[in-house]
Length: 153
Image (cartoon, rainbow, N blue to C red):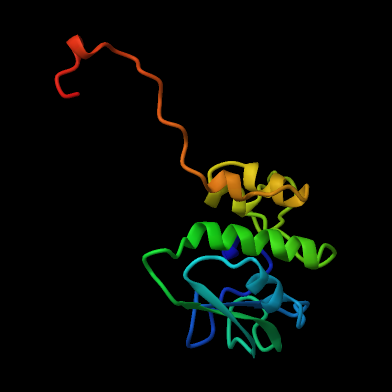
């Protein structure tokens, strides 16, 4: 999901998608993520300089994700918690990318909305709401047919 933001997602490094960072991230990010006690993951503070893609050639600070238990690690939930933490810590710097590259007259759709499938995640993060309930599975549908008409019940 970090492709939909102004963060580097590790392209231009030897660890794409294992690390995320930006020029504005400081020493608060990794400890703030650790405080969330997300299952199955540890966040290591790091600095790096990507050779291409977003922020190429610029020194960045961010985190490396270390999966400690793949059975309980929830990647989408972790990414959503990271996005909310970024917005909270860096409200004037963290931003969403547009899918059209910001070209005037094209509607400026946010790429994160395309990745998520709606604008609900972006709106919740921007409003400072807890976006984690968006990661919960939907409630099962109500009973729509009686057992007598179901072939397999």
